[in-house]
Image 1 (cartoon, rainbow, N blue to C red):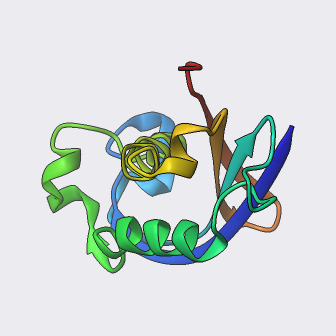
Image 2: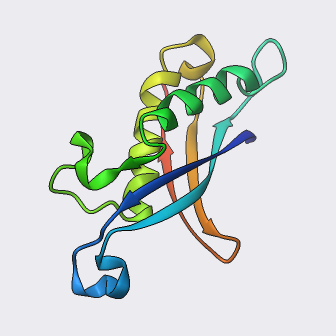
Amino acid sequence: MFSLTVRRNFMIAHSLPREAFGPAQGLHGATFVTEVTFRRRTLNEDSIVIDIGEAGEVLDSILAGLNYQNLDEHPDFAGKLTTTEALARYIADAVAARIREGQDGRELAGLDVTLRETPDAWAAYSLGFDPR
């Protein structure tokens, strides 16, 4: 399996209003290092997984809708907890929807999104694609 990863940062504000989250129940900020890894069984005719520029542009466009936003007020998260795990899935689903429109995207085996809050703590979500 081949892979290609792009990385970007984004910052948000949110609250996690459940007792399990202790002090994070209140409104607070978070900065995430976002890594999206695209997986493919074989390389395309250009010997790549996916165009690295396209991959970065897709991620940039998705993160632009989250960066510097209060997710408590973001319509996509109404009534939902915006845990790191939930955000990883949201980003994975959004990237998959955009990237699978292109020729290279249709040949992908899947993708992984990792959100790093600190060098010592992160969460990830893996999304496999059905072969066509």
